[in-house]
Amino acid sequence: MHPARTVKHAVTPRPVRQASRAAYTMRHPVGAAENKVIGAALNGGPRRRRGFFARLFGRR
Image 1 (cartoon, rainbow, N blue to C red):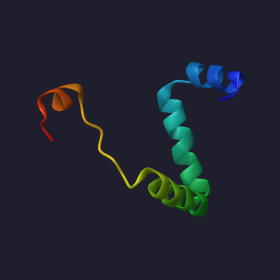
Image 2 (image 1 turned 90 degrees about the horizontal axis):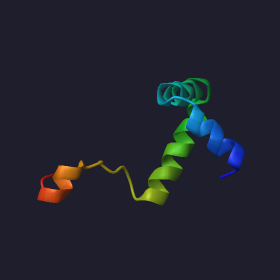
Image 3 (image 1 turned 135 degrees about the vertical axis):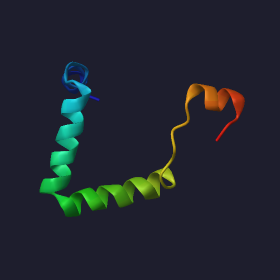
Image 4 (image 1 turned 120 degrees about the vertical axis):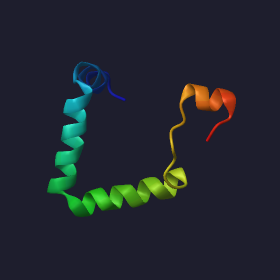
């Protein structure tokens, strides 16, 4: 990633980034759907995040 993008990402608060992604989805629904399909194909589908203790103790 370009250094300027890295700095911008580090400085921008998470709620602002989340709102920006939500606004993109509202403005470009076809593009957002396409990105979701591509992400599912590359990542093997949606994945659940597991917390530290769930991984540690094997709970699902």
